[in-house]
Length: 330
Ligand code: UDP
Ligand code: MG
Image 1 (cartoon, rainbow, N blue to C red):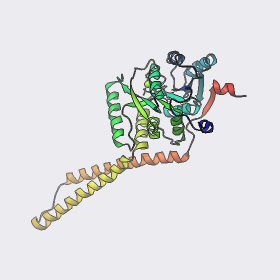
Image 2 (image 1 turned 180 degrees about the horizontal axis):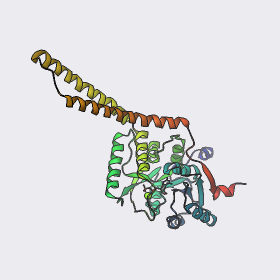
Image 3 (image 1 turned 90 degrees about the horizontal axis):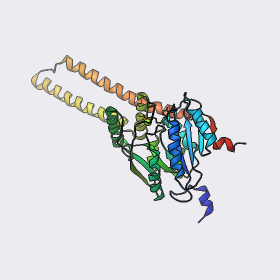
Image 4 (image 1 turned 60 degrees about the vertical axis):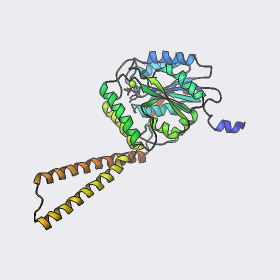
């Protein structure tokens, strides 16, 4: 085999020696850190030797998350801590994590133990079979009924509207091969919906059912506006259906008003009557201006995204790296 090609091209899944990286963004998760470290450490201990690592990104926490992580990194050289200069949000923190992992296979997971680390060996089995992406299909969500219903509807709406075949009920918890991560990193999208980009890359992908546990401690760091923001990022990044809907609705309104025009002419000429109805006029005008404004807003959403993309600001700012990076520095 050509060794030069081997050095420059990422390995195919399951080939070569496994070096597993676990990438986790954390924002004010001090109550979860000790349990998280323990459970991930136990999973890594069971793997064949291979310089595995845990890459934690502290997304500008204001509690002791960073201090706990740094202390752990002093004791365990598998731990790398990337500290961001402020809170940049989950997807940006995840991007930072993917920029710092060095493994041949990379697991992305949440830091609140909703994604059970014990599922990782099952991911690895599929990876060894040659799958580039093994993602968790969430079963048994423990959130409130209205949140579960919203997730259910959102994933189906998005899947129906997206140009890509996005898997249903799959979050960020997944294992990806080196080459998939490298391709995701080439995507320069400012508003990132990583689970969508993961599908966009392609190769062989498979979902396995994984029980979505309740949060171990603390409360969700996704406020409703943040959650809606993520939903919109997914929708607008992977579909132009909302834009097309404006054209379709507009055409429909024109067709209706043409029909009504013909009817009005007919009754005027042959029956010498004019259609009446002040209420109908008001309703039609207010309804149609509402529709206009909604679509103006939708166009604005796309435009705002274009604007932010054009500014091309970095996605995050790193304050410091503790662990592998800092040790290898002179
Ligand atoms: N998170 C983050 N930055 C944020 C919000 C969340 O790094 O601005 C992290 C958080 O600490 C957790 C993961 O992203 O490890 C998922 O967040 P959370 O559990 O709050 O989301 P939910 O499960 O409620 O959707
Ligand atoms: Mg969570």
